[in-house]
Image 1: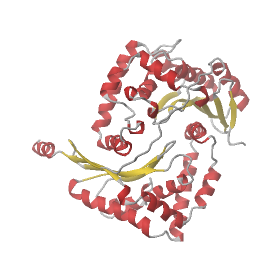
Image 2: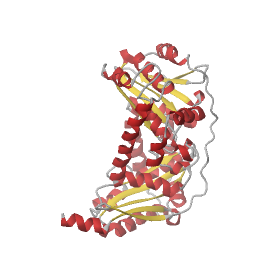
Image 3: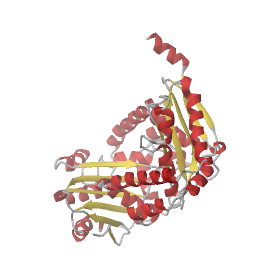
Image 4: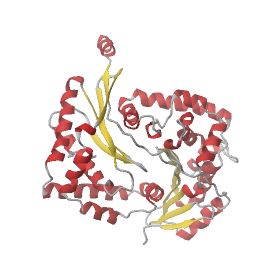
Length: 420
């Protein structure tokens, strides 16, 4: 069986389909090469707002009919916005696949942005912003983007600001879509047991009528990273800390080796170096993680943890100690082998998810112009040696290159909390 099949319609929209056996569920979605980094200063938050508004009315459906269309047959429809992508997707029994294609194509290309719905959704997004700001573990990740990327669009909060969200009207959505929607930068991705020819026949009924849209991508590339150490006082009980720097872009030769290194340092495994050194040995944190995000032209490496204020300095020292070990002490052959086996196992398990594979296909094709097979990624991992791990550690983990953002508890808030 082929990994996937591909077809391009005259308007430039590409269809990617992977046929799998032994499933009754179809997963499909539109992945658009548009995200919050494509916003202009007066548009901050509009990509995410558009994602919400897509469900609030089209040329032939009102909000209720959109929400009920797939729910009524036990399906699910969802969406998300990132710095570089907007995605509308669905999962449902494959016998209802056409209903999903019909609905998704409608909300992606035919939204009408009713004024009353904009006002209602404006309130919803403002509540969403408050929810994230009330959770310091979420807020610090958003604010750390600004520390690293400054006033570059990558530093914008995906949700926008209260001022920008309150200012958007129908014309703003229409303008943003016109400026950014290019059908050659749109993927319809699909995973199900349906044969490819049937998928193309069904999808064609809804995509062939969409006109060719052109909007040349003119993203502002990120340059000029400068190290910053920022501390903010918040009404919280613990100290929260983010430490990190820029890293490798999506198509860089070091992306996968560095991903492996970060996984070793602070990935989801309970045996990550940071978890063993800080949680398991001392009990200073409930959780600590390291992760990396790659963009078109740069990347972001970050470590996050929360701890009592009295142990914050010690935690930071322990983090620096683990980074120093990776810079100065090469991995032994058994350590290197274990790190490779762990990440290959994690990747293989994630590849088992048909929904995850469907989303990955579209994103990978837009970002890289190809879909890397699991075997290809494994070969790249197997080729990593201890010297490469040390080189990458010394390039990225140098203390002089690391920025930080720390949320400290407000003493008055803590005193009041103790009184209560």
